[in-house]
Length: 265
Image (cartoon, rainbow, N blue to C red):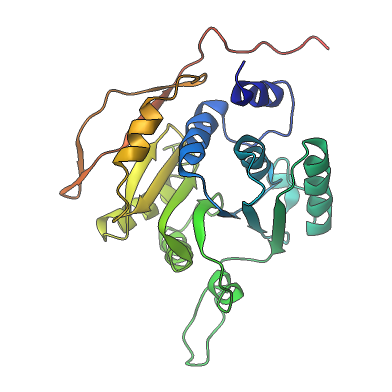
């Protein structure tokens, strides 16, 4: 088995598993294995399982991980998330020790929807204010929170984009019609406005990039990946979104013969 297959096998057998399905996790992780991000921000960190998985697969100690969650919300609603930030920090430290992960994880507890007023009396997101005086630029941001209000989600995405590198990947989780479809609607409205463009569509998660990011090499490298387990790539179609030519990756769920059975131990 390849190193990736070993790690996915561990998750399948009860490891620290993200809420996303393996059929959607694997193609996202494969894209990031090609892209190789250095500063990763997860908005809606939950139990940090997604970031832990990325650290295990990337095996790059230079990647910095940042996570935001609102612990004022009822933890019973969010499967796998500890009750408070201190418990989450302990959980992350335990996972880092278990899997020999040297990367730094910085975790913040606040509500990204808060709208205080700036010195001019204009509202701004606490997400923006928190990083206003920081030099951090993210090349990978993942949104895994907020479902109800398209306008609110767009506001958060706008603020995220103010803190990205020239080339970045923006991930939106739970995009399915029976999940948090408003996240997908918000992201596609940014596509229509020319802020971002699609890169990857899985059944439940999408990736977007800067409109000036030349993605052909990334897409070609993705096509050459041989150890796909839980997904297949759909035939290439030359898509146009809002009148703009947009090459994208599309995947469907698939479990090949190598698919793992749960251990009897």
